[in-house]
Image 1 (spheres, one colour):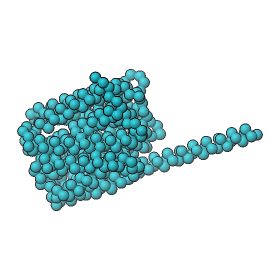
Image 2 (cartoon, one colour):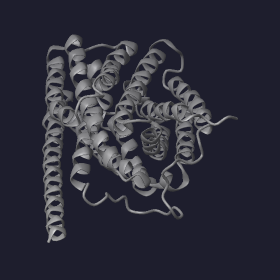
Image 3 (cartoon, helix red, strand yellow):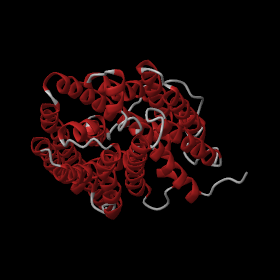
Amino acid sequence: MSVLSSRGAFWVTAAVAGLALWASAAPSVVYPLYSAHWGLSTTTTTAIFAVYPIILIPVLLVFGNLSDYVGRRESILIGIGLIGAGAVVFGLAPDVVWVFVGRALLGIGVGFSLSPATAAMVEFGGDGPAHRASSTTTAATAAGLALATIIGGALVQYAPFALHLAYWVLFLVAVLVFLLVWRMPRHGRFEASGGWRPRPLTVRRGTRLVFTAGALAMSASFALGAVVIGLGAHIVKDLVRTDDAFVGGLALAVSAIVIGVVAVLARSLPTMRLLAVAPVLMAVGLTAFILAGLDHSLVLFLVASVFTGTGYAFSFSGGLGIISKNAAPEHRAAGISAAYAVAYFAQGAVAVGLGAVATAAGLQLAVTISLPLIVGLGVAAVLLAASAGRRKASTTAKASTTASTTASTTMKEGTA
């Protein structure tokens, strides 16, 4: 079997990123069915959503640097295998316990595959790899989200075995992507020396401020995803009063489609501009979600999806871009894994917290509370990124002044 070219490997790893988010969003349109068939509360269904990041985080912390040592291909193959196993468990699930097990397997699989896929996209991306990789990763993950909700919604509404069939489609997609990844080069240009062992995920000295800014920006987008994906199906069904699962899936997919389109169109915009505009867009979008619930308006829900999708794209692309650019090449997956760990922690915390609020006091209050939390993360990212930029400019100016002074002194000494 022939080995893929760099261009081919780039697009295959983009497919891996899409598969990872498809796996994340696969249960989103099925949550209302779980509630109806098994009598589950909103707290339980959001706990199903949250177990994914809760399991994924320790995997990232322990195995986040694995692909830096054994190669991107090997780590991705392990991850896709686990995603496939999780899909099978979901596809056979007779009760909610199996659902939690399947969700955990999906989280472990994404933990092994998403960071090395993102790092590989940087390395296979050609000229300007970090910028191109961040926008393509955002678009690919958005495509995965859209496919999960559209296909899942159609299968739930029109096909038999509504609780299970969508996961068998996910399994088949995982098999296809696994076969494509098998054709990737076994080793890349940047690999750490020595054997692998669990190591703390550290951030290179001098880049910690910009890393924190990027991680907070990614956290804002993932927390927003907890609202749109974790509560979105309930919002469509209960607040907007749309019972059709396919219509609900299409409504949820609007945000993901917007994310993908905006990520491609905005790939040439400066990172600081992306980060600065993102909180404003998120605030408008979440406000529209609140109004959609008050007016039971699908139109307002779609408007909210457009604004939140654009805000997500700006925040995630900007955050991932500055982290990829500043990560050491031989430890790139470790740096990206650390950022994903922070973002998934934020997503899990928001999902569990909002789920509890939704159960106790209603979805409307849960979405309202999410607004200052998510916008606050985005604003903090902007402030830290600006501070990092000023610090870098100051350091560069001092270095330039020192170099000029040294050159002048050397010239004088030579003249004397």
